Length: 266
Image (cartoon, rainbow, N blue to C red; front, side):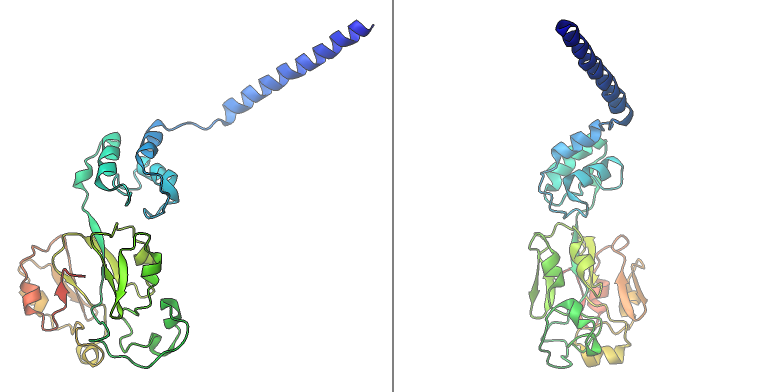
């Protein structure tokens, strides 16, 4: 009788094991996650810093975005050209066709050139300034506040406050765009690294008012627009803008600008 009990117990346990095994097999097959071999290959090329400088949630997120065609093959700011080339081969595209970019601050109104509206003592952040009288202690309500929201956001130490305005180190910048998102006045944009002529101003005030607040503000005189031989310069809302794709770097706009704010130097 004891032997029969042992056999029955063994049979029950064995049967249960078989049923559980079958269940797990069916469940695993039904809900298994398909492995994307190309995505895995891309992930293997990424450095693994998970810095977020690419704008995605770490290297896994970037690998998935690249594989789906949602991100450029050279989107990793840490890996640079070498990683971009390697991923380009996996994706079957030429990474060299991508244009290197850098952050550009559209303001030249440092402490020597911009008027200070009042002395401020308190929480010194760019976000705080937006809620103060005149939207900050500088006379120009469009210019760089100089309290470093962009500096805090940059994971590559590529941007610093110098004499009251943000200045980008083009060589250190990886064009991750974090400073662009951090600036409450939207003064920073990503431009081609080799762009020679850009407008260092964002004021939309009329010329007379601009000159009251800053020595180097755009006065919307249209001279840059009129003298550009290829139509790359336009003046809209009292501010000049240069289309870097159309610009031939002839320098005509910079030579005619009376405020001297058209330059490729950040």
